[in-house]
Image (cartoon, rainbow, N blue to C red; front, side, top):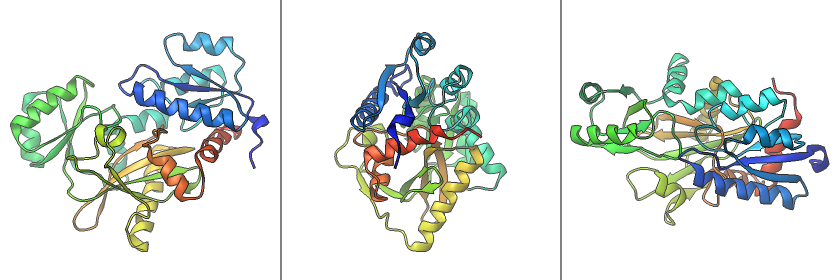
Length: 308
């Protein structure tokens, strides 16, 4: 049983200025309401340029980070809180920065022999031509440091690749293109030392994009995920290894594709996953017997332990 008084005064950091601001506002409102309903002395901060001043003005014992994307999920706010001596939820500076960068995440996984789709980086039209020859179509184009599938596109020919590269450049100067994996998509959350039940995702869209994640009412979530016991154990183990490789702690969520031969392929890890009514970590926690309030309290209680 978590002693809510031991948690002290809690600042819920949400909103921010990234492309994922609207999702973060919804996540933050849900987390704040749950903490307050549980009796935690919590208040919200819509993070802006005055964050340092607001933290200095308040007597804060710990922070619950619900900032998605750059400026909140990339180690930036984690570093600020480290300097201020304020305990915070989730991963530290290095793990947050690594996981936010899809390219460097893949490089770490490659170095450890963890399976992740073949890729290339795009900085010019020639790079697009080279990627087409190297990877073949279809492919998926991604801004390297965005989340929520913002700026992503599936491409089936060179003309579409060039257009998608130009579109992704609007969000990030570093653009990644990956080999397309045909098959089902899975997502697996971690909570402390526990790997939560995997979820199989289904959508009528080309892939699990922003609309499928946050707007669509026909996105399908399968828990149990439909894998046999051995394949589910393999997926859970791969999740733990992928997160450990990046130094992810506290909570997070890894995304996978499974090809037609049954092999799993790592896509990315989210260190501050969504906490909206469409979000996946609360679904997985519910399947493990933990309601939303219990989930946020357990995440927050992790700040009572000394980091490292």
